[in-house]
Structure formats: C-alpha cells, structure tokens
Image (tube, rainbow, N blue to C red):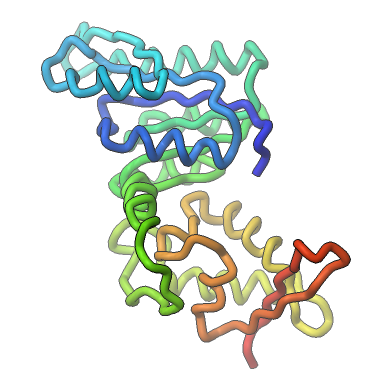
Length: 250
C-alpha cells in the first residue's frame, strides 16, 4: 500500500446504500488519498433524500443524472465518461469504483490497461466479471461488519468454518490449496516462503481476497489458523520489524 497514491473515488448511487459511505472512505484511506470523490444518481427521487447529509459529512460531490429513458442508466454513462476524463488528466494514480453492477467491467479493465490501480467495492451479489477486472475488490458487508467489531474483545480462536463460496467469496478450502501451491513455487530450499510475497500473489490471483472476509484483520493470524502450514518469525536489525515466513506442513 502507498499512502501517497492519489485515488479517484467514483460511486454508483443506484447500486450502493448510503450506510456504507463511511466504510468506503475509511478503506480508501488505507490505500491512498481520495483526490476526487463523486457520486452519480438521480437525487431528485424521494428514495435518495437520505444521501444529502451523508454527502455533506464526507465532502462527496453529487453528480445529478436524470433518468431520461426507461431502461437506460444515465448515471453509469456519466461515471464512465468522468473516469476517462480523469484518466487523461493524469492527476491520479488509481480509481475506486463503488458498485455492484457488472456494467463497469470494461471500464475497470480499460483503466488497468493504462497502468492505474483499480479498487472495486460492492456487495456480495457483485458479478464475478467485475470483480476479476479489478486489481483488488472489497465487499462492503465485510468492511461494515469488521468496523462494527473493533470494540469487541479480541480472541485467538479462529472463526467457525463456513462455506464462503456460497457468499460469492473464494472458499477457504480453495485458498489453502492455492497457498500450498504458491509456497512450492516461491519457497527456498528448506521450503520456507516469505509471507508478504504470498499475500501479494494471493491479491493478484483473487482480486476479492481480504483476510477480513474470513474474520481476521491480518494475514499472519489468518494463515496461522490453518493447520496446513508452519509459520515462523525472523528478527531483523530493526527491532520494530519482524519478517514472517511460512511453509507447508509435512
């Protein structure tokens, strides 16, 4: 993550609830600085009135788009046009597209072709093509639930096993097999692989991979909770930095 990255945050109001805005802005701050914050929709509709105070609180600029024709989404078109204008302005390092709509799949792919970091955010109903087109993808329900748990007492126990694939997320079983494969590919002669490198590769193979999806705030406790791996710590010359390595259990 790079705190200096300039990120354009573009939100599809027709496919996102206002209750998620705080979590969206907080999450983007982990990846960079939101230099553009725009939201697209027809704010003349009565069901959009709840957005007013939310937008003021987070300094998000609403882009009004009337529904000119039934069945046509003018908001999607406006978001795409703005994204391309921002891309050509060369004022940002990445984009965050917030929507559960597959209509932005081509846009995400085009932005990545131009070397942009593309972070997607949406609900678990988001179609797989849009998720795959993003470099990283965050589930809004997970961001909200993890934020709500910050006041709870930490526990060392792993969360109960669930079939994550039914929720649209990559299953933990599949992640175990992928991690085993990655270790075999990048480990040293003794079978140890740098955990940071494994995390980076996982993000590339699964754009929606986030340890918070599985109840963990960090990668180390997530991998340690699996009985398939050994994890060890290696001290460095800097007392504040400890490197983590992992290998497959024999």
